[in-house]
Picture 1 (cartoon, rainbow, N blue to C red):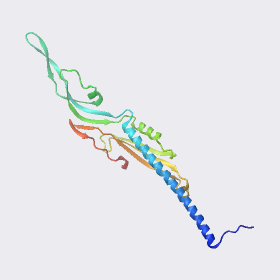
Picture 2: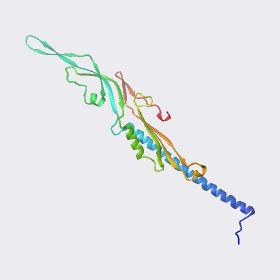
Picture 3: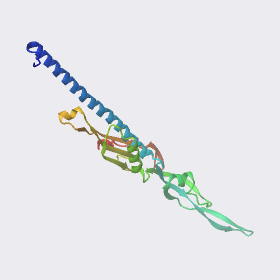
Picture 4: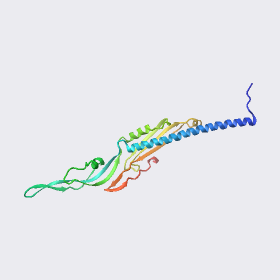
Length: 223
């Protein structure tokens, strides 16, 4: 005996209920995919921020360079009827360029003459270490979100001091998140792209004048 299906108003109500339940389940599944994508996006932002910060800070740190003005001297023999001695003559000032740690902190500018004199810092700037990109990439890989299956691409850019976007490190990447129910709508994956930038700040000196902290770099993530 064949089962009888409800007809009339009762059957229409049952069909409508089934459609509503199905639509609700599909919507819940789609919202779940979107929620996973949002979490992955935020985790990816954290990863690129950490990568940019690690690149700008670095385990070896940034290297500060300076141009300083110094002076030296030499001895000229002065004598009288009884003895001779050194008459110190101060030479014209000269400029030196090098790392601030060696020239200033360690006193590398000194030569031990009779007229060694430090006349001021003319300019200060920084350089990032050679492994900056490698450090940033490693931190990005360590913090890669678990929800993202793969890294489609990544880019770490180091902007030098004289660049409008520098001194800073920018990390950009794109991941891939496989969807579940959004596949029914033809969306097989969601690929978030995130960018992070970290700048370096220091006391600026130009022509011997202290000009305060260096300006913030321009936003390289919108570039």
